[in-house]
Image (tube, rainbow, N blue to C red; front, side, top):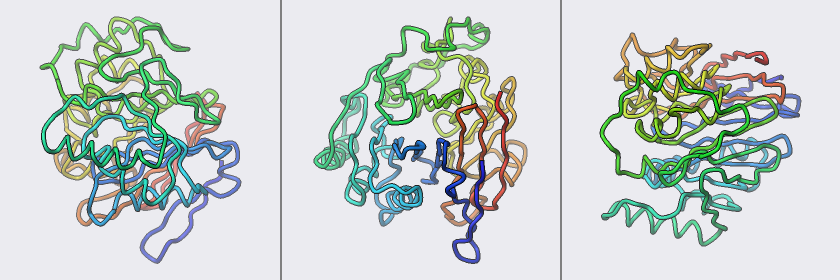
Length: 339
């Protein structure tokens, strides 16, 4: 699974997928949008799915970073853009993105449950983006027809999968030791969560799903089973990432899409880091809240303290379950063999 280290200027090395690296691989770009989410998946045949669009404004910074990744992946359009929920750091960049690159279909959970000026502004921007695209509203159990990979919604609009998926259905032994938190009435609890399957490789992204909804999903029975890679929920906040979820998933690798001043909470970091069978945790940013004790080694952090650098993490997965994670800041690569 060859990944090529190329140079983009003297101070910004970037890991590029060459022809040998992209053939037969599912490529995932964890794009830095400073504490929001923008995760781009590209299948071997060029099918594409973007999960969330980052923040608005900042001179179109996040839309620009997404389009740069898409162009580097060889895309002229993005087939599907999944909006996990209607918060600014997830849907705010949608109108700017849609103005810069064609989007085939936007996918979401339906009506925003929040009200007020911010919600109204987000709705207006999203409707502007939808003028150029189709819209697909999903419920748990629905599939997103991405060419070259299976994408199944496991949560949406506050509901969760009622039947086990392949490899799921086991009792969750961590439910008894996980106590509920306060009820979350926000859009976070409505997040669309997806399981992506590419051969034997399994990737889970639950957006900003919060603690109690995790318990509803996983207890008493885990409908998902084990995954290879888990995108740490809610940027690594402690109102998400319960042991009943993280430990039952047994991820081999976890990716935290935190910002320096957002997410990366020590409590959540510890739960993820202690997950049974975890080989590595990678972070998009050094966490200011985590300090010296609750950050991974620098070689596995895409953006260190200080200025906005916009570096990303990348993953290339094979159908046999093996995959490589790469840090675009320093060229550090690590390959994980098939399980």
